[in-house]
Length: 451
Image (tube, rainbow, N blue to C red; front, side, top):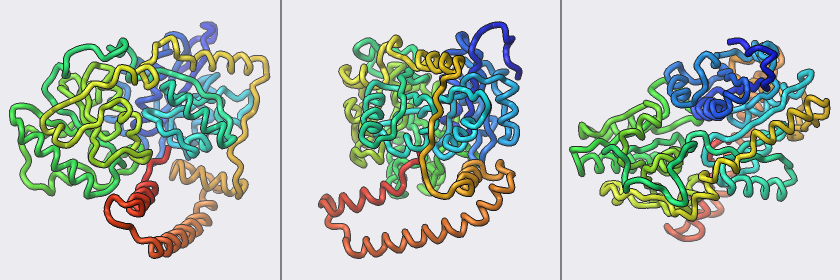
């Protein structure tokens, strides 16, 4: 892959991403501006990098040409950015990786504009999501509500950032105009369940969902129940998964033949869907955009940890009994404009980028400081090694890992002991009591995703 001719005058925008959800997001975001800008995607080799199959799935429907995508090692990344003449870099990755890359890009001569973002539903706005990305020039979010809530978070915490709005790439061309149009169900007959790696977190809860899928398949043998997975066996996901659904289903014994699994792109799964079921996957937004009804499971309540508050506000919550009966729901029309289905002309992220590019051309692009923490260069090396794994072959990274790993283990042991002491002092009360709710919340908080 080489840059387009220098004389064409278009800004050169290079995205860097590694995991399934971020590669899909970055490819779709750039695909939407590929005619306006010279866009390319570098898939960075990290411990969580997509497989070839996941990459093909992520690029499906993105409108980013395959020849504008290549894999790159960390050791070659700086040189490759220089060869491509990047004016703008879009960082698509988990927070720890974005922090490392933004810090190193900031040190480049005539540094590019650095843009970052989150690949789906980002309510609630979290401090960690902002802190990891402080050294980026622009933070892209995907709804008016997200712009408002992240802005309020910055005002409250003092972690200032510039937020911009972009239609969620998977919601472009939505069949939405004040309400979702179309039939009461999708064009197909499949009940598609969008699995998530960490929601819900507990094995018993995930086993309950597996049983629900079996019940839904048994209720109507003439129609399929599709377990839509993000990764095949041996592939990585953005978030590590414990208690995968295929293993849980296998433990239940013989399964109905109409209960099937799929790792196809979500857009392909939705093409034959009657409706989509999830806890809080962004696939719900993708389904709504296509006029396909949704059920967001209410079995585990509504909480920031479940990432389902915005779906609850859309009036999409329903029970497992509703799933089995296929009583899918469309969102409340009043919810749409504030939540992912604003008019296209409300998007302003490219306008913000143009302003930043003008500042860069004039030599006035202001530097952005990262989050101040202890440890200096050794801490930087440790964070780089953790984010990149064996992709970081530096001597400093090796030293930091050798020193830091035992220290981290000791700190975790100390924290674990402290939690045991606190837990012994306050036992959970009866189910539904305030003590029980606080205890459950503490457990869930310890298992939430890294933004």
